[in-house]
Each structure stands twice: as structure tokens, then as C-alpha cells.
Amino acid sequence: MTNKKYIGTPTNITDSLTPVVGYKAASLLMHLKTKYASVLPAHFSNQSFEFSDRCQCRKAARKRHDFLACSCGFYAYKDLADASHHRHIQQGTLVFEVALSGAVVTAENGYKAERQRVTRIYANNCKYCPEEAYCFALPEIAKSPFERLTTVCFAHALHLDLSQRIMFEEIAQKASYEGYPPVEIAPNKNSLPYYPEGSY
Image (cartoon, rainbow, N blue to C red; front, side):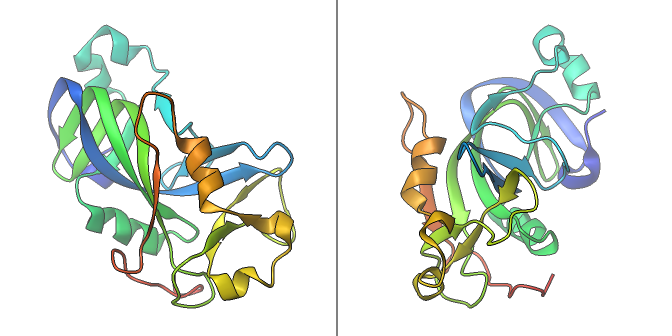
């Protein structure tokens, strides 16, 4: 059944040809060797997705009632503020703006969709200070092949090895698809509140 924990009780399901805008808290992952990037939703611990992806559950393609009853799909909040709050309580996450299409379940606080495409990434302020982020950063000591990217300001980026710096333009290029507007990396200094590292 549709997970109500994040989006509330479903009210209806439609086939949306015009994308519905939603917001979600998620981590940005990068494979250290291949530099392949993907997105890990805050409510999943081990299932990442492409920047443009489709639910693999067959129920979405068969009967809409089955998709409503199934827990599969891409979840997103209706409001940026709700995604920002989720980002605050789950360390290491960013806020993503997404375009949802296909079978779309509308609920009290959000949506569940068959298809999802990232359209904007709100970069957190620097993980060390309230300054606006300059780039993403890989950890100095890798613990696994895939690592979460954090954000750092220009001053703190100078202390990193060049291999640790992942520029916004590189991620935007990886996240953008032909035929769609390029993905925007938006600083959150004036959009989302600053939470110091460790305040979670």
C-alpha cells in the first residue's frame, strides 16, 4: 500500500501527462572510480535511482488501483518547506525538485509517481559554516565505493584535494538529459535554513 508516513493519506490517482512538481529530501551519491552519480531518497537506505527514472513495478503499468495499493513509486512532498524539514532531521541529505508523471497518486502532503525526473538541486550551505556552497565534496577517507557528496564553501574547498572537489557544473551535466531543460544547482542561502553539522 502507498506509504502514508511521508505524504499522508492518498486522495486520488491520475495519469499525468503534464509533470507535477514535487520536492524530496535525498542524498547525492557518487561512485569513487567511475564518477557515476545517483540519488538516494531519505526514506530508503539502499535503493538509489537515476536522475530521470521510471518505477520498475509492473503494477503501475497494469491497473491504477494496483499502483495505489502498492508501496512502490517515487515519493515527493508538495511543499518545499516539508522537504526542507525532512532534510533537517536526516543528516547528509539535500532537497531535490522533481517533475512527476505517469501514474501519480495525490495525497494530503505529497505525491507518489510512476516516473520522476530531477529538475533542480538545492545545494546546502557549507557543511562547516553558514557560507553559501561553492562545490560538492567527496570525503577525505572513503568508506565504501559509493559516497555521499557534501557541500563546502570556497574557503573550505581550498583545503581539499582537487580529486575531492566536484563542481556544480559536473553534477548538473550528469543530471541533465537531452530534450529537457538543464538541471539547475540552486544555492539555498536564501531558500532553505542553515543547520550546522552535528545539529541533527
